[in-house]
Image 1 (cartoon, helix red, strand yellow):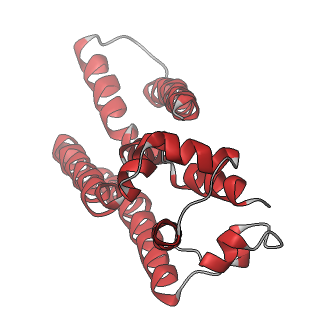
Image 2 (cartoon, one colour):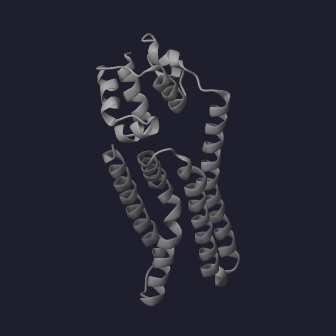
Image 3 (cartoon, rainbow, N blue to C red):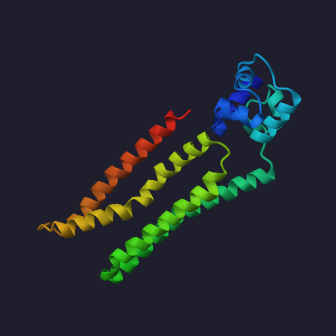
Length: 214
């Protein structure tokens, strides 16, 4: 694979635009474009900067027989950071809300009078988790485009954990305000129907926006 193609793929993999990569390397956007088109090649200093930025070796960049970045393994430090970030995101964004929902269900069954309090507490927990994801993970991503794409991807999945509490609160309050003689369990069926439609729609919309971001 030619050097220009490697730079293009590495840039896209990081979510950089040509302008953002140029700003990182303190060169012009036209220089990045020429590198990717094969009209010129980076000098030694820029090759070193590219290697550090994309965390690949200069040998990988210059050796055409090395076809993909997997041929240039990550350093232990980088791999450890990636592993820690992934674990933190999975724990913070998915496990904690699930635990909150389980806890709310248990308390809900034990004491019906505490429903509103439990829902409020669980919603606050989810908001705290979203803040942690934003502050500890997304804010550390190097460029605006990459942060936006990562944010859209995370919330397109995370909305399935965020939406149950507010949707249930709306359905429950609507039932109290407009009581009607429904069959037992009808309130839960309405909740599931609304939750499913809203969650699927939110996922599709967020992923569509993410795909349109270059």
